[in-house]
Amino acid sequence: MITIPILGAIALGAGTVLDKFNLLNKKIGVKLYQSLSFLFLVLVMIPLTFFFWKLDSSAFELKNVLIFFAVIISAVGANFLMFHSEKRTKITNIEPALIVETFFVIIITLIIGLFIKGFSDTNTKVIIPTLIALAALIFPFIKKEHLHINKYFIAAISGSFLFGLELVLSKFILDYYSPLTFYFLRCAFVLIISLMIFKPNFKGVDKKSVFVILITEIIYVIYRVANYYGYQHYGIILTTLIMMIAPIETYILANKFLKEKLNWKNILSSLIILGCVAYVLFT
Image (cartoon, rainbow, N blue to C red; front, side):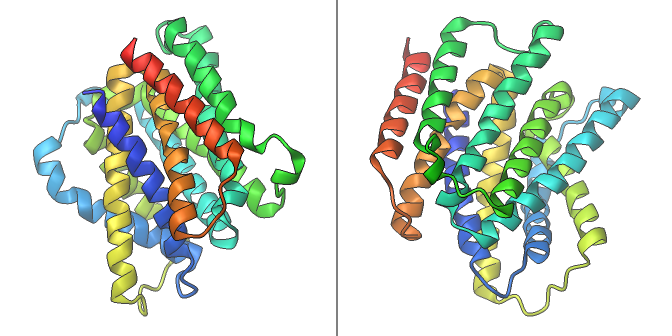
């Protein structure tokens, strides 16, 4: 079932571009968009919970409850910062910051793995191609002129760190949930906190925007559930390697639908990443 994380990577790429498309709507601010997004995420998953619900009693131990709420707080901050940056600038301008999420996930995982036996994969067949793919991922942005460092870029970097932290923390408690249950509860709590903080006004959101946001959140359900499934069955490192396919799709879709330019470095980077993924999966 390695195809599940691959499906998740494809969904992530599409979701990133759809987020940007939705945020181009001047009538939808960041606070409203975050609230709408998590509202639809919860609504999409409610019927699915009847079929995929799993919640072990160990999830209610104090240590695990504290980790869960650390995940929630990280998610609230990460989404707001990322939506804020995507609202104000092009995806290609903040793509280096978005990509750094992968770096944070791998580095945090490897550091924790030094102290907790079995937390991270120690197989060099997986780790070395993953590090090569990570270098390839960052490669298109190593020149200073390609980095537009402003407050939106810094917001995206901060959001990426919080997303990376959230994902790694999730690994500690995922076994007490099904992937869908964990994502449903995460999104439900993020929705409640977002509504309390932002107090959004949903009036005036047109039907077309509602429909596109709904499709976007269906895609994100596929991504996150697949990602959590990968963490449970293949570990963080291998799943993260597979998820590196997502930026490749983001390049292609942003070029096609948002008219953002590709360059030869993006293409070379994409080929190296695909080669690393293929090597790990087929050797």
